[in-house]
Image (cartoon, rainbow, N blue to C red; front, top):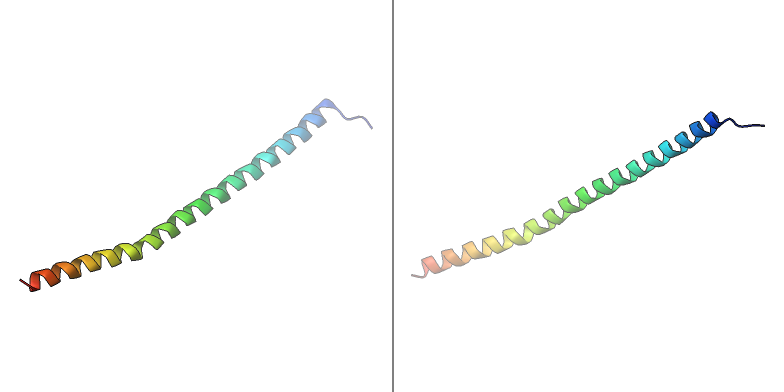
Length: 67
């Protein structure tokens, strides 16, 4: 059972292509996960920001009425 050089090169190229494909899939999953995490972080910030703004508006209205 002799293996020719071209068969070895072809097999090596297949293995390399598979490794590259798996690496690309891992990178894509990581990017997607980071995008979701950034979106969730922004959603967590919205409620406190709205709360602070509404408190400030309430204080301004209160002080304007008390004059």
